[in-house]
Length: 285
Image (cartoon, rainbow, N blue to C red; front, side):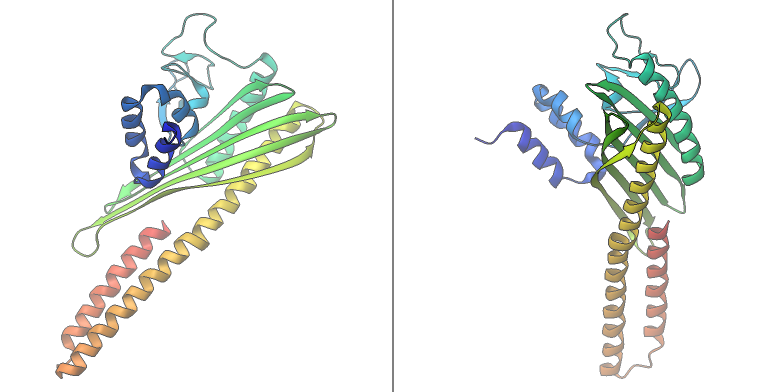
């Protein structure tokens, strides 16, 4: 008999990635014993909550969760509150690095994303520390088009004398949708991409960890963004272009065979060209 956990993961991989959160909740309700394992293993779109103490937005994930409560990186407090001593918080040293990293990623988010929300969470591990860098950007809906970008960067830093070994696992969750019922109908594109890297980097003090992790995240995001643009969107454009060419050839052939004037074919070709241009502009957003 197949392992229920492996079967659940296989099922989630086959379902629409745009509905990962809903499908995950349904599986957890059917098999409550798998809830903790699934929540810690499956990446899902990030949710936003506002810190009651500071008034700043932060992102929710499994790494700042304790039961049904989530820790704010700005106040280091849980919402809803947990009994004293039960909430897991980083040590003083790691908390200071966490605060510095949050300030740094807030600048990074403003420069690269021009908006959105960022959050960083650190925790203690043997021989070092670990953490997660979260970024979320929701594109404002316009002309029926919308998009959501979620970046999840989980890393581990192990101290080795004056060097540190970093292991980074990055996941990007992308959701795009466009509704143009008169020309295209409804178009949806969603999925996730995961990459890993390991690197040894020099460390002089705790501040070196902040710059090293920031550099790793920046390089990985650049590579994954280029991969999405050149490979996935590039292939989609090729497919749309081929469909457009086949459509025009069919229209031209039919009018040659029937001996019509070609006026209607010109209007149909123009309509197809406008539809293709709208689809490609939606992908480039």
